[in-house]
Image (cartoon, rainbow, N blue to C red; front, top):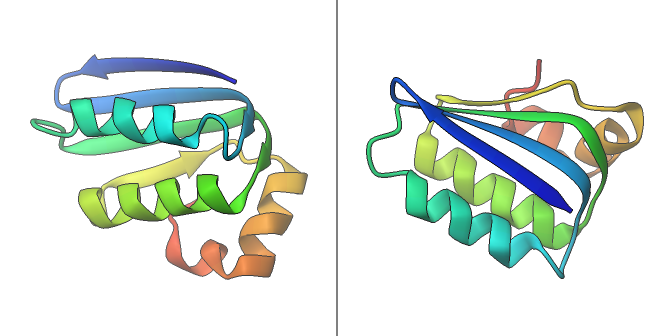
Length: 96
């Protein structure tokens, strides 16, 4: 999976490309943790995210808790949205 992270004016913009699973969720979590300090918002572009596992869901939930109501997911594909809906995460996460 490729993770592109850009910080700009208190916002963190992340683009995920590939599969967010057990093998790379810790790397994603660490990258987010290193950049939370002065962030006011977190926008995660999921356009190229093909799959998310329970480990990936855990990282997204932790990010949501850390950022409170200032995190949103954009461009979520149908397959990933199905996972969010089946797990109840569609009701927890802000998805646009």
